[in-house]
Amino acid sequence: MPSSTALSPDQQARRRWMSVLAKAPAEKLIHLWDSLPDKPDWSYLRRPETGMVMVRGRAGGSGQRFNLGEMTMTRCSIRLGDGRVGHGYVAGRGQGHATTAALIDALMQDETRRAALEQAVIAPLEASAADRRDLSARKAAATKVDFFTMVRGE
Amino acid sequence: MTETLLAGLADPTLDSQRVFRAALDALSRPGRAVDLPDVLPDGAPAPLMPATAALALALFDYETPVWLDPEADRLAVRDWLRFHCGCPLVADKAQARFAILAGPLDALDGFAAGSDAYPDHSATLLVQVAGLSEGAAHRLTGPGIELEETMQINGLPDDFAALWERNRGLFPRGIDLFLADGARLIGLPRTTRIERKEA
Image (cartoon, rainbow over all chains, first blue to last red; front, top):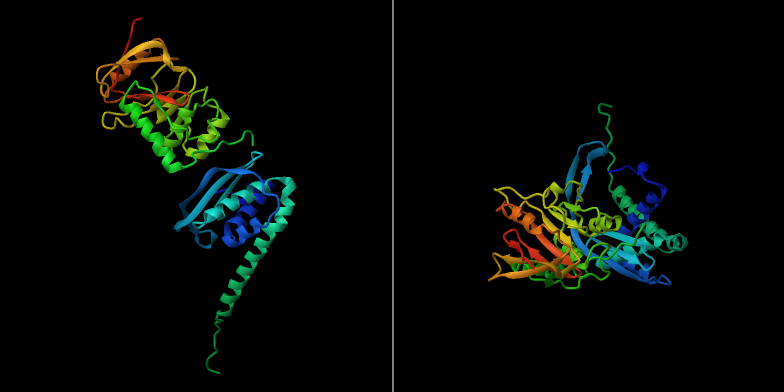
């Protein structure tokens, strides 16, 4: 697995939006897509298909790699009328989710549309992902127990 | 991106079954041309013919190393095979389980013929020819042929019957052959006996 330092800035940018699209809730992503103006012509290169991927983990970032387990995912590849290819890899069985993620990935590669899409789709999704993470971090923090040592004998 | 990637099968499950069925028909009736169903919404990446491309989509996967002859070895073909089939592309023809020959077929040597214990570990060649109905006539006999079949191929080498006889001598080892022209296909399993018909 190449580290992120080995990726070009373009690849890092694409990795970021692919990650946002993959983790976004399907209904929200599809809703944002539906509200976008001027949709492009597109066709399937590879229709959505559902499969399993092995998720690998590593304890503490330095331990041995181990197979954590398999998860369901759906992938899809599309091609726009101008030949740009977009890929969507998303968790779960959402075929519409994978197709929409692929479409947005293809459009994000178009420099002229990137800024608008970033503002209309990626930024809101990223913000709501941060909110979700924040909320679960707060919930977890509320249950945190601080252990301290009582000094005995006084 | 250099060239536009072409789409794969519209319905991967049913279309690949249809193509597989046609390939099975071709191999079970050697020498008789079979029409492959039209399964490619965008056509085939040049120089592949529709029949070759359809067979590739139906048969190739990550377990089948594929060898391309110099004529077929183009970036568009490599990208297309990698994307749709996920098959490894090998430079050494002896490692290949399938080979695509878009140029002339000059030898059957060098391809894996399997072993006596595993004769199925052999290569299947997809050879593109210029025509399946004119050219030198060959008489075919053997399993799948009641009396005899006549095959006329435009684009096989003159000594094809001799090359094939050598392949047949390896039985049960040996390679199997598909001849493709456009969307038509002739199958030649290793069991078929081929003689050159003198005009």
